[in-house]
Image (cartoon, rainbow, N blue to C red; front, side, top):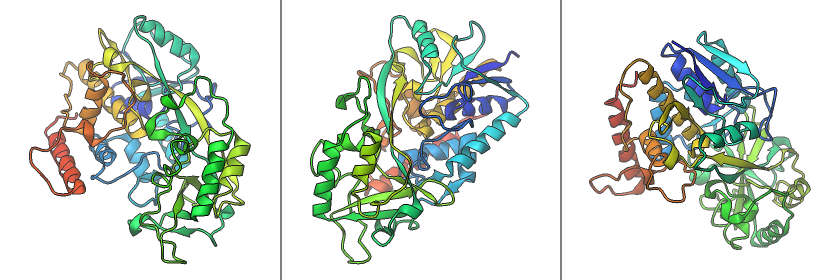
Length: 434
């Protein structure tokens, strides 16, 4: 059997390659790193993450928690490596990014049925089965090649932002404290309190700070789930106080009272030496980030090991181009997976890689594809990106709004979501996932 070509060794590409190989199918995994890097790349390893908590909630009352549990039951490589390198973060699945990527890389490179070919892909193979998982920062040459594949369509673009990182030793813990909101889980977050006067001064400077030049950037084009903090601030003086800086459930141990606002920092590595400023995705100029963020109590002398950056993300008009198995309509030998399909988030990208590989392996062995039902998170996400009735298609994280509601009333949102998750896992048990 001819080897399948998988383009891109991000989470979706690595997962697709792994799922194919574990079913006895040879894979040629193509990756342009380290020969060519994008602004988001800092390591030659595969499956590189932007921040430690990119895998988000691990609770079944949350849709992404359900999706992760479904992936575990599909023997996901990404989930196995994430679980093996987690760091404490309350109810979230946070990982040591470097150890995680190194583990994925080692598993992929050591598999006897996976051949890694380094170098930029500028043309799609004219024959054979191909899964394109080139990510939201697809190179210009490959992007032009994909555009030629769909002459009657066009790419859509949005902008994605990453938060800055600071060293733990530079945080003034005389002003900050460790706690998780409402004391849920372990006390994994550093909390920096702001009084009303401190918040107002910070908000004014944040709104007035200079932004880095980003070609084509407009507030209307910002992806809502990853909005730059300065864009959020400009929407109203209280937007941050009721959003990422809300103080609910975080009383200051020195006063016993909730501050006016709280900036949280989350551990970014297993050693606890680096912390991510939660909700502070930004594309301010770097000197402005230092000036404005140093106004936060406890961060006056913060040492920034990475400033926030803004990236251009590219995705397909998938509802008109792809089917529920992530195949190109009318050209089923070609498949796409990952954020280029319009699934938003690392967990969602991983899920698309699993599903695409499962479909392809079954097709190559003469079996019918697995129709993940809409009641499952994997099925709901695949059906969303392939629904031709969707107008003005935009990237989407998994959420319970994509999954059919229960046929009976359940008191309490968390209880209802838990039942939806239980139903999904029961549906998954009915499927042949081989």
